[in-house]
Image (cartoon, rainbow, N blue to C red; front, side, top):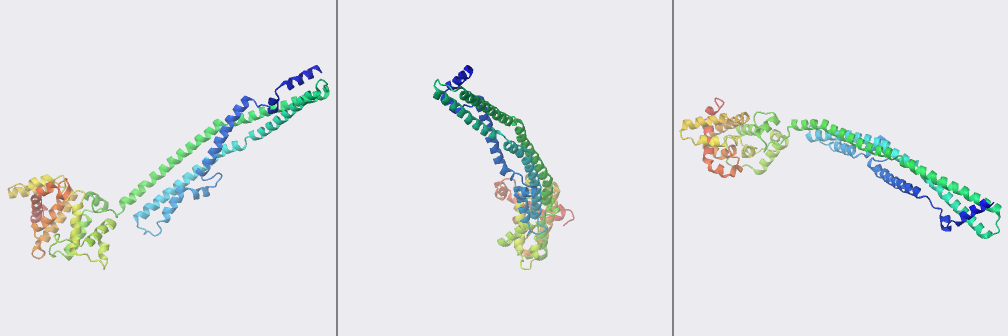
Length: 446
């Protein structure tokens, strides 16, 4: 009996405030703070990942419908509905759309893996965490223990020397039982928190899997683009619809698989057939609007044949001649080349006529093959034009005056460069010599 009384006194001597509060241990509070912070962070991870992967628990078809690459690919392909089958743009857009659809499937597959192997495990850990129930049980135990302690203290104060030992023993037993339950509840909550924290390595590995899935998806995406790019490049390269004006002669001939530039061949044939006797050819300016249309046709469809077949369009002969001059003027490098410019000039300055022609012949033969063949094609035509000088008023000297600056230029500032102005007489004399001695310069092709 003395032992029970001393136990009651021990409990009663504890501070009333602490008895009512029933403090949770510091170690448990530390564990709880870490666990709750981790749970909050992981809940945010799941929340922000969900829209990134287009939803949790979503089937493949729904993911594809939401996927931006798939949506873009389909939209691109749909946009070509009204384009002609031979359209290069249509072919390129269709290939790009197919590539994007493939990439969409890869991304949807990666999203599914992230959902199943990253988000789902984290969500399961959060959902199966028993800390909430353990915390509720601890709260109840805490209240029960506080109440038992309060009743024991009240009984001690009320009895004041007249102790009812049976009641005191019952209250002590109640307190000890509640204390035991409270301590067990603390231990259980600590176990739940620690078990949750024990998943940190597994959770971290799941997040690392996200990196692996993304890396693989990016590698596969690059592989798709690498597979489709050569096809798209080939389509572009094989397309006849390339710009004609302002590109190098070699590039133009390679692109169109030709030996003679299309502008030279078509314009010369047209002039030869319809207007070689027209007065002032290459001297009189053509219609600006017609020349603009002819140039657009060359750059747009690579030829003016279909345009000339239109009965409502009959270009003036001067517009055709002006288009030819413009093409020669805008070549990336002049037909007679920048590199040989000074050799041409030096040859033209030779005082002895025969030696001068011989030097010009030598320089002419050093032209690149494609330049030589196209220059020959042009000069043969210009020689025929000069043969009709009585009617067209375009002698070889007149032709040289208007054509030479478009055929031979220095690499300095184009037609208006001081160098070209200084050598203007030599340039025109070179072209006139080529026209006058066409058969000699180009053997018997004239």
